[in-house]
Image 1 (tube, one colour):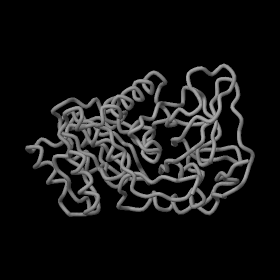
Image 2 (cartoon, rainbow, N blue to C red; image 1 turned 135 degrees about the vertical axis):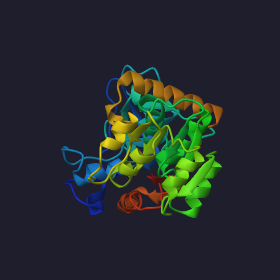
Image 3 (cartoon, rainbow, N blue to C red; image 1 turned 180 degrees about the horizontal axis):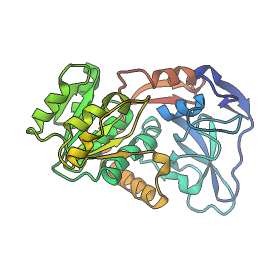
Length: 322
């Protein structure tokens, strides 16, 4: 037996139920992982609320996690019991004490990276890499503006961009968040709550505007992004929470690209490239996941409230064994 969080119908955080259920067993080509930490992402709340399409009920939420290989199914020789791993998804859901995973959904977790940090890897660092380099075509020496740079994806984007020689401007809503962005190597950090900060972005880039903008809240910022992005610039929409009216002429006048991103649309070969880059970055030490808050797994409903609050700082994780 094990404890897990399950959802029996769509709704608010209150539909996350702490239940005792059977521990899953790994089948052919599968691995059983004892989950030591679970990553909480905004997308988890969208799925729970029904905003991301139909699901079969009941289900265990979660794609991100880290732990230790507990058991091997038939035909598995890539892993051994006791291996430290981080997950890029699972067959049974990660909001649980145990999860079964296909072998290709697991990646080695270096000893110097904690389980809590391991749970903060997959969605934030994969999303940030895809936004910057696969969709955004970032090049060394360019200016990049990272909106909401103090959140999990934002800090990952700053670390990636700095490691590849980009000039980084980040925004954050709190003083602690702005300090965190600077600590990760951004050249400049601004308050997105301060009037006129977009004009300051243009000034910091020598009047040209950033070549690339990573946008976490398009419904608030997309029109302003189009007004300040550089000629032939790119805007990658990572997050959005509503509708907006905007004038497409701003994109036309600059030959600017507005690019959408949903991590789960990533082609397999591009996802393999992302995970290889993440592994190298963790080993080299320039990727350092920042964990800000920890909740017991049974308090997942509180974590789902916290992950949508303004002023995010790093990653929120759940701990199944406290």
